[in-house]
Length: 453
Image 1: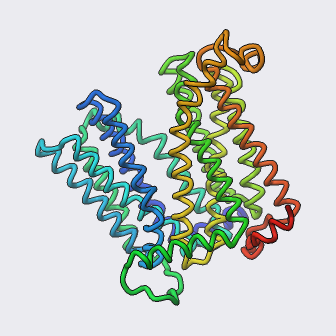
Image 2: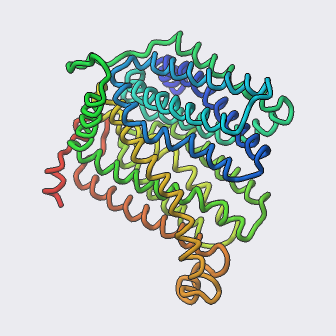
């Protein structure tokens, strides 16, 4: 009975957010369905990886590059209506695609333009939602709210490829676009019936949108990060983490396929996806506790161990355990990290700070994607062939042959994350900076850090 009453209290406190979350989660799943469907359509019509790569490029990089400017605008505008108008714009793009497809006028270059527009809309949605969350949820519920967000992301990643495959076979891409458009309408309806409080009005003038004023706004957002050494450390750590994650994303496929089949690869990724789902459910229920920094670096260290397990041997059960553990830790790491940022920065500057953070990690992810192939193909893979330079040293521990250079890189990634996580956990524990229930604990100047070092 006690637990039931506690659950009722939590639901009441999160009622506004839950309505918002349901609508936006459905919209996100619809968007993922279209993404997978368009990818299939582009490849079927070009039979080239290059066309698919360009769609991915236009979907990701433009959003990363404009994000700092988006943050400056989000802090100027009403956050609820920013989300509504960006949703409307994205829905219009989807509708335009459907019309082109129904009238047999859809061309490959149309998908590049729509991918670019979707990327821009997605940037406004992501930053506005991140900045709005602290206004909708009490601080002690932030961990649970972020956990729910990553839960819907996990569900989308698991179900979207399966649903897209089923739906595209039965209702074709045209039907998939209509489903996506419908989810946008549901998301818009939920936004209209809830209230998203605005932060106190800014004291600086916001008349007009001039480039010099926006640059000043971005600089002000950077100063909010630079003046707090804790946030600087977290920014550096998460940049490294996403760089490693970018490499890992590229490496998983060839690591498994180097000695196994595509069917086995699919089974392993299903196991990994279930790990992410369980991790996000745990975070939604638990909330990360009161010591977010300890939680963050504990699970980051566990993520490092998981990467070591994944790369250590070319054995499917071991790789499955490693990837399950790695994906399990991700929602907890990302949720606790985001909660720290959202509770450590003034509401008026949330958009700019979150956008700058997103730019750093987005670029780190992209560079990680680009770095994995040359590191393995040109250096590590040849070194760990049966007669390679490292065959009698490292090869004696992790094996030799195709895929072992990839495994070695994943082991090194894991060791890097593990060592940094343990070091930062120890440092923050010694400084007794742990409880995020008091935001002032996180306001530590660069001078204090330098004095400690």
